[in-house]
Image 1: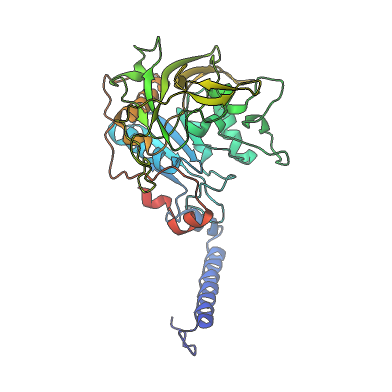
Image 2: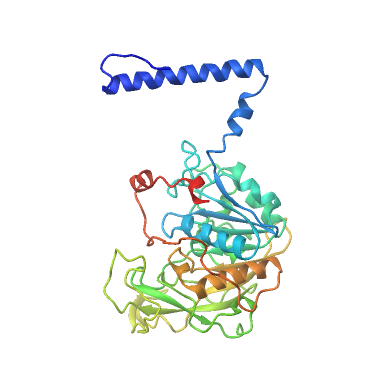
Length: 391
């Protein structure tokens, strides 16, 4: 139908055309729903042009990967991990994303209160979580809580040590999941401490200036999570996170993080910021304040801090389960074969499947991760990262 309005080029008339067409199409839908019973809901739910999560087929066990961080590009890392797990190893994978409910199907890492599709955890065999300071509504948190009560396995990546954060004025039945929860119960330290083995403490390395090289922890030399990985092959331009020592009695270190200096100039156009896996210079002594506030000389590599560990967890009222926590794993970290292999091996280990001697962790498709950084809302508005385009 063509509407012949005066001055076709004016903004006002373009808006009027849109309004007229909208009301006509809406009226048709309402009329059809009246003729065919409760068909309007069916019509809306069958609109496959809006996909709120990424589904990858496989005949194996079901893995749900939950992204949602503002800095380390989990929305890039987890789809690539899912593709490797699905294409190379046959697992069924579902990747979830943070989204503003006003723009369903468009990734918005800065929106802290909505990750559609968490009900997929009901039938999941493994949860991989890579979120940061989320404050999800109860009707979404309940699926995570029920999953953990069933004692199912968990892999937590980088910011998942502080996966959740609820403010004082937030109304939630799951405040105890927050990183800063300090109640006198098992949940002290939140999800990170209880389920993974540690919460967010601080940066140990110089963020954006020092990289991390993985060194096998004493006693973990034969751990299957390290199958096919040579010494030093786990590397990433993200720095080491601080982890309190010793780890909880339920946790065992698998990989320690050696702090390494950048040998080239800072390059903000480079996803690795000028750092390279060939960098070998170790930092000298630095000044840091001790628990009493006194400045002392500190060797960042003595002792080395765990960057990957296993843990046995049990939330109140739930069954015992196991987890694998790692503070490396930003999207740029996954450019390294050794780092990817550790992640894939951890999946096999968590699921109780045999870990290959050297798993196929080849990149699937094109993978060009962006550097880690916080981004303004305008960046995401312009990027317009549509989930259906990721397939």
